[in-house]
Length: 347
Image (tube, rainbow, N blue to C red):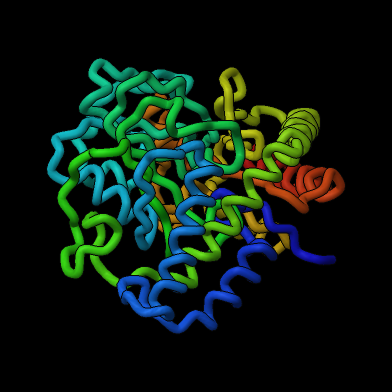
């Protein structure tokens, strides 16, 4: 039986629109910084993608700066600014901030001073959505972009981070949306590309794919694709609840991404679950893809008040377009069978 990919928060399959745009960009010879015809053609490709990303992100009028990843973008907007964040943030953000904002048992972050705070819109492990205060310094929009309606211009934050490969674009390209006129020193210095914020010749192939993917993702969102995905997530949650005992569904009481289910199977370590499901033909995760290879309890769950043994027994199932009801129900039956065997062995 064909494998089922249920790790869309880690990365997504490349969209056909992105693939086509990247193939076309491979034939563009010029350097975007060159003034001759070939250079102008390359520049036009980059600017078209910039407009596509801005439109999909609701960031018209903002500065869209292309970078190598959302992680690089976090360095650009967080380094040296004395910002504060909570332990639910991605490592890319916590690496540059004082990690001292409080988190409650439902994953909500207290933000006493938005102007010096970095707060994600959606958590990659739990899917929990934050109610962002106006005036934030930085918001990581990576997981929310393309999955839930949002507009950078409405959020009222000075900087937002996004990544191409989370919505069907290529890996290795991201963008930062900046409130127009925000003065940030470049972390990568050189030729002054990207409005002086990020030096280095632009990755025009990746950028073209990002633009096409962003445009297609916005279309899917408008057409209700993610509402259907949310229904499948709820079907999965209901099935797992009926088939097992003691399973904890993290964030069920609050708003979450429509595609994300974080569950805790007490006593059954997350990495063991991932391996057993992999052998059974399903790709899931024990947390953020950037940290799931490290055998340790999720700091996101620990910050929400879960004890280490529970935080170490969590997995994330994240679905996307193309995943069907039959697939999620088959996963539910397989996962529940293994969990119930594990519980029986433990007595």
